[in-house]
Length: 330
Image (cartoon, rainbow, N blue to C red; front, side, top):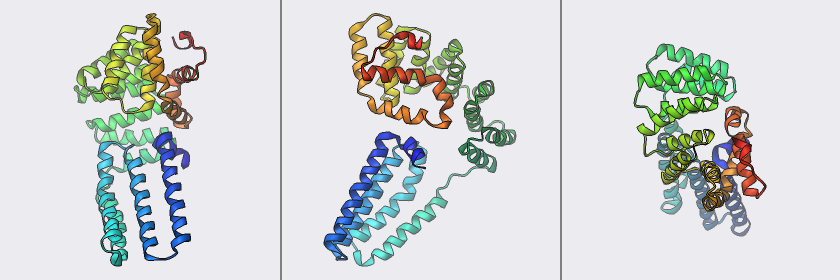
């Protein structure tokens, strides 16, 4: 459970959550010793609890997609507001407000819960157990019922990739493209499948189309630069990776590899100052290295290890100042 939470939050947010728990917990314990059951001590302890809840909620919500984040904000904010009123405005009614806040959380989970078919829920449940065959079988039934629902094809394609069924995943992404010809998500998925299969020219074609459809998004430019790194097209790598970085790439782990690809491109072009600058930027992303180490250690990360493990290791060596050769990755 803790390992999954660490993977979800990332090493930095996980450490912050533990630090927040320790700080609020020890302070609350000290208030118990100093203030006993006095009213001021109880009020401060309630504020500490709210601080932990707010801080923990922020750390968790920051890792969620925007749609999911908004759903949970709708659940949590009214409850936290009620608890804050109970503490600061009407402590004599704290029991009533606390009960109302907790009641809203329970009700909100049902009010804002995501709907989904039994097949999708069965697929998610099987995926969590790493039973990808059962998850794919459930999605086969869902796709049969709704053959023109692109989101179901995308989910099944991702399951196919986890199971190592790249040909089937490729077929699903191509069907997505038939249904939604302007979907950058479908082209990005296809590019990632082709990259995973080592079909770099086909991956490049799909990634180029994704970038045409979403020129302001960092994902397409990043994928395109990574693919061109495998093809040793150094000038194209620099152009696309710099575009991805300029689009405010949010995660340290992706910035780490982006700077690695820039370092390799500049090194191939024998541009020593630019390569040194890329390595200096890479070294500032140590948190990204930690995140990758946690992610690729998971059982579900087999596909990621196949594509990125050598890159992550080379980045680690550059950070550590160990000798590195371009032959370590093409």
